[in-house]
Length: 171
Image (tube, rainbow, N blue to C red; front, side, top):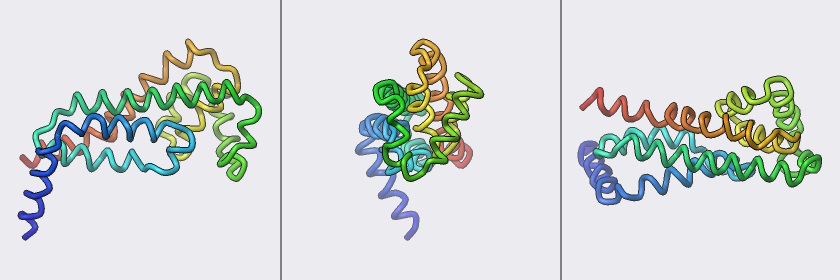
């Protein structure tokens, strides 16, 4: 019975394999975009997507790049919002109700600069807030763009690769 459900799921994924890249792009974008990230648990979804997409014969590389691109665009949009709103961001939801996220994000940017932006990609709840705060604190675009896309590549690969690896190990 379990094999029947597994085969049905794999067949469904195979029939719609072309949707994998747009889906992970959207998930990466949502995870890196301030406010949307609170609604979408992309990191956890990437683990499962990697496994089922790999089992269905999908390519890791195209999904990895799509997820990374979505995350990078989300980071850039969030950074731009921070530059636009500047000091007002502390009064916006959810930072207004969770001031510790704002304080921690400011700490990452002030103490570690570009390295803080990179490390925040792996920092759970503060992931989308550090680019926002970095923009508000006036980090230069060039510095942000040197580190954010690289962190997005490593983040997406970190959460997608285990599923593909497990699938390959059990194939």
